Image (cartoon, rainbow, N blue to C red; front, side):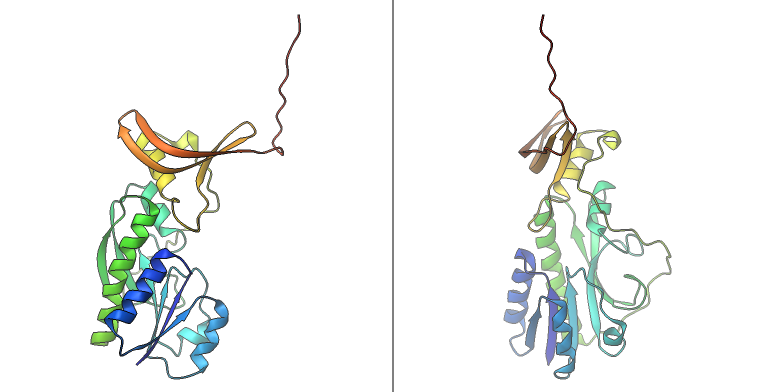
Length: 236
C-alpha cells in the first residue's frame, strides 16, 4: 500500500508522520510538504492521500480520481472553511471533533470517513498536538478498515480565514476573552496576537489565567516608526 501525507513542516505534523510510519511500517508512506509534490499522484498507484494542516487548494483533477482526505477540526457542519480553530476558540468552544473528510468541490463539505473528539483547551501548540494524536487514530482507521465515507449534513455557511492578529480590544468583555485571543495563535508558524498602543505593537504569548482579574503572559514590544506619533512638550 502506498499513501501520501501532505502537511506543513512543523512539530505536530512531524510527530504525526513519525507515528504513522511506526504504526504501519508495511505501508509506503510518502511525505509531501509542497504543492509541487502533487506530481507524485502521477508516479504510481496511490491508495490514500491525507492532508493535515495543509492550507493549499487541492486541484479538482487530483481529488476527482484519487482518494484524498483532509483532516479538519470542527463540530460539523459548523466552522467549515478557514481558521476553524481560531473561530471556535474565540467563541468559547472547548471541545470539537477532528474529521477525516473526503475532499470535494465543497469546502470541508465532502463525505466523512470518521471522527474523533478533541479538546480545544490550552495553547494552540497544545491543541495541534492533541489534533495530531486523534488524526493518527483516524488515518489508521481509514487504511486498516478501508472505510467508506458518509455524506454530512447540508450547510451553506463557510467561515472566512482570519486576516489579522490584532486583538479587537473593543470586543473584549472579560479576561477569558483576552486569554482566548492570545492562545489561539500561540504556536510555531503563527504570528502572535498583539495590541497597539501609539507606535508600540505589543505581541503576547504564553498566557496563563492567574485569577478573575489577572493574566500572566510574555510580551514582545516593537516600536513602529511608521505610526503617526509625536512626543510634544511645553516649556514655561
